[in-house]
Image (cartoon, rainbow, N blue to C red):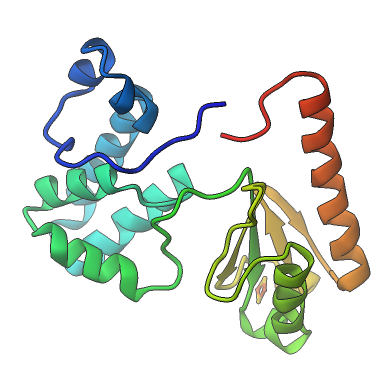
Amino acid sequence: MVLLKDTTIGVANRTTEDIGTEGDEDLQQVFRGSDVESIEEIIDNVIESNGRSRKTLILILQKIQNRLGYLPRWSLELVSNNLKVPLSNIYGVATFYHQFSMELPGEYVIQVCMGTACHIKGNSENYNFILNLLNINPGENTSRDRLFTVFKVRCLGCCSLAPVIKVNDEIYGEVDFKKIRKIVSKYRATARGRKDNGMEVYR
Ligand code: FES
């Protein structure tokens, strides 16, 4: 099982080549070279189109979170170096907004839409139901088996289907407790099936 660890300090100055060739097992567990390249590309592109500002920082963090599912420390160090902003400021922004997470997410990331339409149609209750169903403790967002991570997000852009949740790239509309149970069971069964076949379940 490759369990990514987010414990490395001071890696942002390393090049992709350093990471791939130096045989440092800890580092290689932390990230793949392709991740670093894609994050560097994201940072360059956003700076090129928007300059260096707070708005740029938020855009970069959003794109990294979309790409990796969370904001590992090494990615924040890359942002800090490229934007020439102290790491502590980057952390300040990343921890201020609920949309950002610095924890490694579970295999399946469940986004619960809290846009107006979904909120009115009961997604707050659905969110609490999901946390209960997955036995996620208050203040946490990942199940103990690391299979699921649950986030509240803003409008997912398909309000006519409200209330909506998204699991990884899959959208589910008009969800209620019954439908949520089925969705969660489906992903659990998939994970179990992969485990039974000797395949990797968790990242
Ligand atoms: S409000 Fe939920 S998809 Fe728009």
